Image 1 (cartoon, helix red, strand yellow):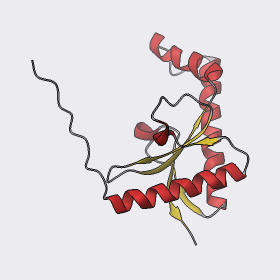
Image 2 (cartoon, one colour; image 1 turned 45 degrees about the vertical axis):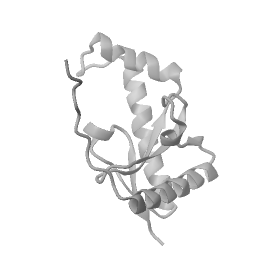
Image 3 (cartoon, rainbow, N blue to C red; image 1 turned 120 degrees about the vertical axis):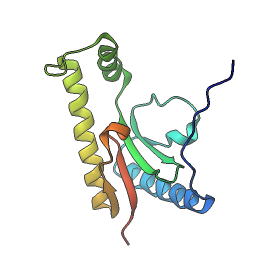
Image 4 (cartoon, helix red, strand yellow; image 1 turned 90 degrees about the vertical axis):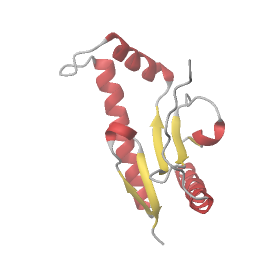
Length: 140
């Protein structure tokens, strides 16, 4: 039996990755200045389970720098466990509504903070990136 093969998208050049890494570090510094807990999830090598802002670089050609808010497990786990059980999406349970509301407001806060600090930001495709913020660059 052969192992299944997955075609990953092509990666960006080392020069592009280096620019993204520098941008990610600048994003981290700015968010830390505001008092938000920030970490580089792509550099930790472990699961992303800490609360706070996970700033990471996606190395693929259509990747980039992303900032994503993670809640504490006490809020996150009960909400996500409901998905495994199946829910009525037209009337989700209160814990799931609260979890989604927190993510929505934190995405808006991150976009506002980073934009105010001079970063070019956008809300990426929710299907592929959930509540992340795409940091496209810095306006001098």
